[in-house]
Length: 175
Image (cartoon, rainbow, N blue to C red; front, side):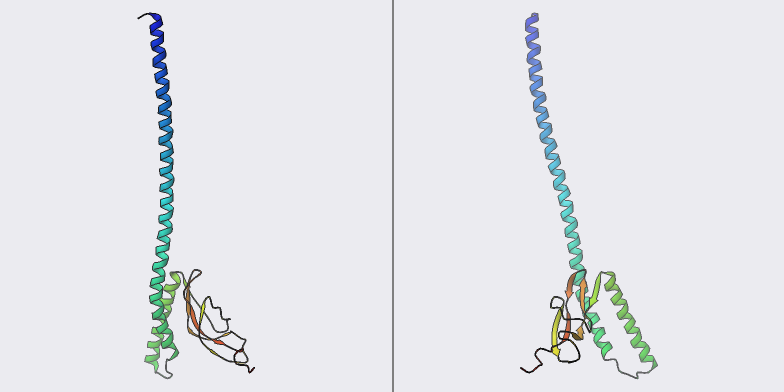
């Protein structure tokens, strides 16, 4: 092989190496882009799973709360009808039961639940359920006169609306 042939052979090898290098860089870029997409997909998956776990926790709290609310309603109803003059032992027993109720309410608050609905507030159809109405002239229209069952919220979400008796002045006046 003469010098000219050697030179041509080296040029061929350089060209092949250059083409290989270009192809290799294109492949590297392709692999890098795929890796970045996979990383972004994984990040999105983690965010979706975290959001889903939060939603599941909230739903579980709501389900547990809904069951416990029924127990608290029974305590509230029992407290309304506690007879007078029970004697020291029975009064202590009732007081102990009411402490259990207070403890259960504390557990509900620790879960993030808050009771709402009280006499004197104005009726709001978004959070109250009108269980009945009466007319009391000295009160304002749509004022809550009595709370039949308390409402409960988990954050801003109403778990159960408060059932209330409202003042209705409009329908009570003669035409």
